[in-house]
Length: 123
Image (cartoon, rainbow, N blue to C red; front, top):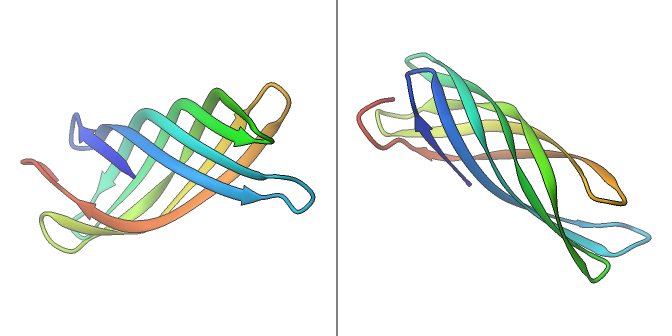
């Protein structure tokens, strides 16, 4: 999930929380939870909004019985299709999530769809 506060019509600040779960065929189950924040830039039209963002924050990872926190980034964007003044459908969001623990580097991709509730006086 994410929350974006629009600072201007085309510039906002986003806080994004997510979680991924992965089973490695020859190893343990891995859990990763991200908390990322950063700027979002949007191109708004009457029917849709296209956005890109560059987020940074922390990943909390669980693997092999150990817990780690490490720096992470999320670079990506998406498309929201307006269904009215206060509601849109996010038809796609794609993020590249490179992150590094002390002993490994992960290159994850996160894809999502969903509903967008628009509150406040702006689009």
